Length: 330
Image (cartoon, rainbow, N blue to C red; front, side, top):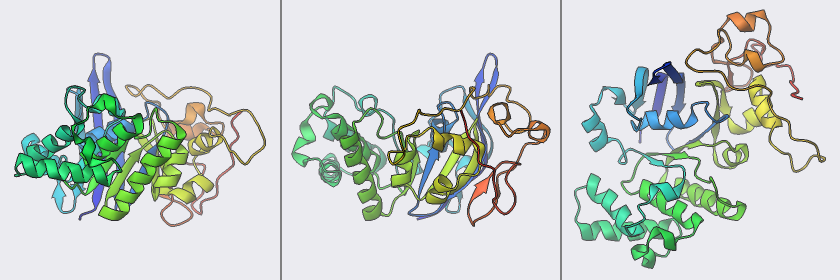
């Protein structure tokens, strides 16, 4: 199983008004068996990053630079057909946001999983069906429900069935895009437990895209905080969430309710994310940052390790030894 190394990845959406820089010079490494959480506000590029890695972009999406290496293979050098046959679903797969949209309502759930296996592996329909039953059991669904339709499954069961489909061809990496959206707390916990168990049992690597910091804290080893198409903070999940250095990360953690604290109003970050067709010069967060000065408006900070090993941040206000001013958003 190889490591995934993403370097200076850039993906733009072409529109009539200009190119939207949805993924802009993104770099990270996913070691085998590790789980990386990707968090940030809506529109920051989280889902676009996942779609870029799997080449599932709409027609107006285009990779314009960078590198994606899995093991010793450069994925961006593969043709679309080579990628479809040799990478998508077999080495990297995806759990899409909203299980209802990922399952065909007129086909049984088991047949959809079996169909994915037949499409990518040289196997008979009977062998694929047997494998699909095993996968359903693996995610906690009675294999006797192979012939049931999506409308006969609960929300949590549908999400687990989609996870089973993502595992159909034994991938090394699973990208999960908001896998617990629209699920109640109890069902969400069941889905997260199923994913954690599968990671441990199968040795999977995972990229979890989520707006929910608690889900990432519970599930992931590392976290990348995205803002306006870029990673602004990166590191071990416990270190980043207990010692956030970037003002944006501090704002995200303050906006999340603390069940142990006294009752208080939920804080939000003032302003809105920038237009990614024409993003602001310098630090892209400076129009919303209470610490911003003239240097922040001119200099585009690089993502660099500061303080503890593995903790990276892109902010001029953080010293090389990891000292950062505490920011309070009103």
